[in-house]
Amino acid sequence: MKLKKIKSIKLIPKAPFNFDATFHKPDHFPSGDNDWQAGFRWQTWRWEGKLLGLKFENKGSVKRPQIKTTIYPQNSLSNSFINSLINEISYKYNLDLDLAKFYALFKKDEVLAPVIKRWQGLRPGHQGSLYEYLVVGLVLQNATVKRSVNMLQVLFENYGQCLEYDEKKLWGFWRPGDLAGVKEEELRGLKIGYRAKYLKRLDDCFGKGKIDEFDLRRRDVEKQKEELLKIYGVGPATAGYILFDIFHRFNFIEHISPWERKIYSKLFFDQDPEKPVSEDKLLKYFDRYRPYQQLAVHYIWEDLWWQRKNKHIPWLEKLIRA
Image (cartoon, rainbow, N blue to C red; front, top):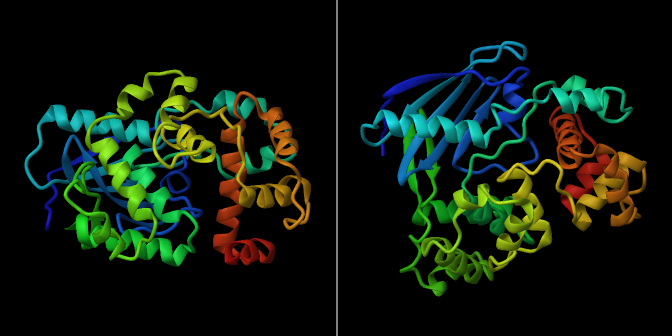
């Protein structure tokens, strides 16, 4: 489906703001719903039932940020729709986040301070809905990056929609519930394996409105965690990722996956990744970053992956290949 531009909007994030470090996360696997190059991001976006193409363009600086956001819809849009979309973009990418207190607290921290200096204005951010986030998490389970990319792409090609705009061809997610009439055997035929069962149950859960992402945003962290753990296939680690990426709980970190333990052991203790420190020791170490434990870890994690983008890191490459 070819889309035409209807409107460009100027967004002013709270300074400081780093466009590329916010709109591109090198640790995320490449998926067909977006594209990035320095100063630009193209992203498909489903909002209030409508599938859109968005283009974000850096028009400012870290100290004086400005984002030009161009909307490419299938049909005309009302002003109220556009205003609600702007609010959602601001929420998803934390454009109004005040980082001043976080920076002030750790301006002398020997590990975090240099990272903050390199990445002034970096925000956590994830454009997907909770449903889309869980679909991506599902194809990442127990798979290489290449296999995950292929699984998501085949789902896009069978159930998503290809949008063509601004000389890009990108895929948009299907709606929750769209897989109701799809048999598990059909999904298995797409070579996604055991994930077919999980995907059917996930789609049924969201399609029937058993989980309300927007209601959960208003709940406290314990209620959010409780409801997330009710979702079939969501465990403590996945719930932790969601609480940070989707619900912006910057102080929440209760579990560390075995793979992350290896990386954190090297980053924070210069320990051989094959002989990682205990989860308890890492969690105790991260307590120094209260009340921003997960945000601090995010900064250090992103710094590592941006380094990898520009140079070879043998110990990290070994873990990625594993």
